[in-house]
Image (tube, rainbow, N blue to C red; front, side, top):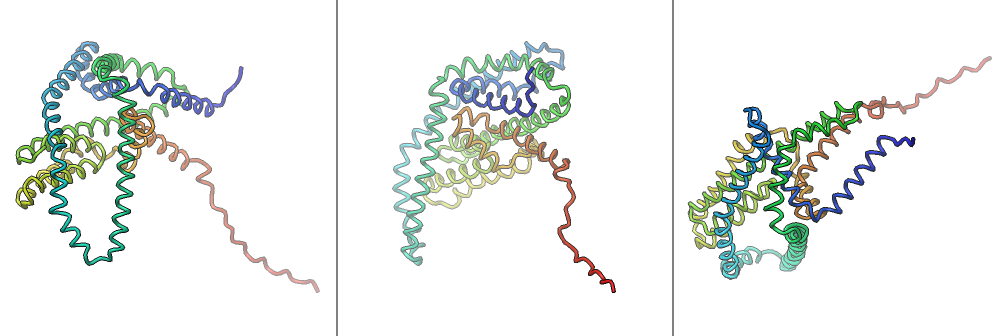
Length: 368
């Protein structure tokens, strides 16, 4: 029998798994969505099972209720979103004209005291960087679209994802036990500990941050609509959705909302401050109550790491990559911490420092 070193075996397994996932990435979207939905809803199924409800019935009831809620929300929101998006697109030329007539003269007046050559250099560089950013964004969106919804078709999400979610939810505990039975007995305890940490990180961020996004989206949509901001529902939901990426949702929502308010209210300070107050209250609630309660302090995913993971996932696998980016980032983070901990307890780290200072030897006495 040929003996394969453990490290080489797992390395080959990971390479094969990565190649396989990349090869079938074009058909993964409905399955990834179904798995994420099942993972998101698993705590509810566990609670129902503890209340003596059969697991299969609990899974069916939860998935059916989830689909009904999503369908109802889509039926109510999609017409509003489409209407506001269409209106926004038609008003963009008006906003551009207002920018040139009202804001641009003020900006040029500010730059009059600066060297014209420096201003021109800044303008050229800004145009270059904006072109690059737009190109990267459009390329990322294009990848997400072509590798996601356009190829698989929206019907696969409607019909396949709920089925996948049901079976994953129904057999989740059985699958976990099956995987546990295949763990190497010598390292089973260590692997279980790391898997539990991964589950804690993923559930803490994905479940928690998803709930944060939903709450913020509803809050901003309702709040901006109450103060009378045009496209309030669209801007509010966009802010909530982008809040999954740290700081991006707040930044984009505030800039967009205040810009629309400036043009809508013709620079009226009181109306603009009302819109700003909505975002200020939302940020206060998120930072002090919503996020600490739902996400917690111990998730351990740095905002820069999350942003990099989302961009890398989108570039590699499109929309499917964006969906699985954060879970993979959490897994990699746990593994890196584990290996660093092992390294700090290894002899390689604990070798005592060698004193390289050579003392001058005592001169020998000559014999008489």
